Image (cartoon, rainbow, N blue to C red; front, top):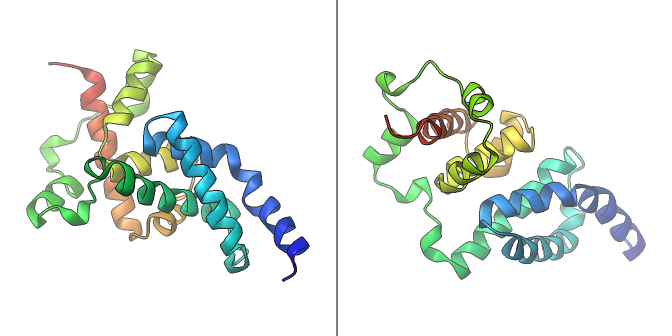
Length: 180
């Protein structure tokens, strides 16, 4: 692949999804300045590896590069801010990914968000989610990706994506309901 083809492919695949890449990085890092650093590094990584793009889903590929770059950046710059569910003991993983039936509420996140209509509270609640749950909420609800695309981006099974999404929604419901 010559340099002109490489640039053209990069423009089509990565740059066309730059606003989405920044939004994802913003959610994962927590602020715009760090997100800019992440997206800049992701752009370099994507440009270097654009010949490996398989041509299937440009948005998923782009967001995968941004996600991986964000976690690398967070581990380097804020190691205490990143906790992967794989680092938790088995009991804690089970509790987070398979909540008890009694924990499930009848209210949906959408109904709570609509009834509250408080964007700042929603942003704060999403920002407070542990990283694995925050990323699936952002990828599903804001980036509107399918479970399959999210599984590909996060490198976990679809079932894990679904359980993390359900758990993230439950945590958001509790956070947005406030004290009982």
